[in-house]
Length: 185
Image (cartoon, rainbow, N blue to C red):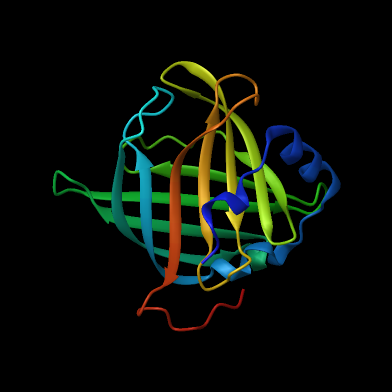
């Protein structure tokens, strides 16, 4: 497994990396299939909170649009006994050679503004703008695929235009026993 500190990216590094590295349609092929995911998420974001909630989810990712996109669904049991379902849509733009990542879940049913970016040396940096509790924030997703059997995703927010970042959600992936090994587009 890759140590936590290895995938942190400063905002200026992420912007430079996204501008100088171009993506390819197969960038997310490593993610196709079924996964068991350990989620570590801050209970409150941008509030100086260090308390985390941890939970497991089952994830399935598959290609769409001939490999120029993919969809990913997360399913977890919430603390209140209800089912939480998250959904990611990733689309590759051949013109810009960048990926856009969109997210929604069954609690809010609103498609979040996308983050966009590309991979370099097995680490993908994706940036976008959003709001958290009415506060404008920069959002950063970092995908680490250097260990394709244990990829890692993290989300961070910045309320100061990228001068500082708070990592508020980490997902650690491991292949599920449900995985059939068929991951082609």
